[in-house]
Length: 135
Image 1 (cartoon, rainbow, N blue to C red):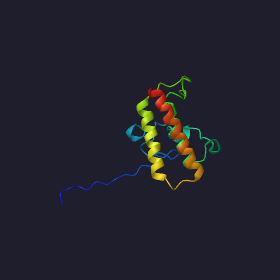
Image 2 (cartoon, helix red, strand yellow):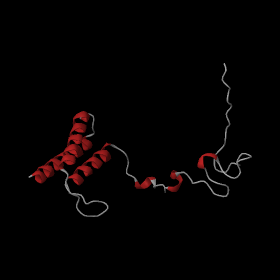
Image 3 (cartoon, rainbow, N blue to C red):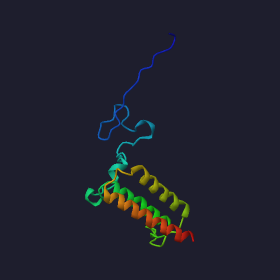
Image 4 (cartoon, rainbow, N blue to C red):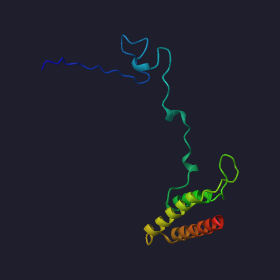
């Protein structure tokens, strides 16, 4: 009613685009200056991991990943950075075992025989090692 309508202006800030006239020296809001190339997105800087080096994503791989976490928290797997045995953290080890038990309960009757056997074997081994560490 008594308000003045403001227009808006569209500025193309994509790399490789010519700057709009009047802004040749710099871009608004701290963008790259003339002669400087804008920083490439982070995804372009990271090397892509070859797909062949990754294991197939399936239930067995998931269970093996969780169990490796459990063994790590029990101090049975070396720290990947120092290559020294990781300190035992029985609280986290128990949580990982509990997570695997929940998965076992929720997937009962829906697993292939080899998946069920793998889960049972890993849980058995984690429980035995947990009791040994707990003393």
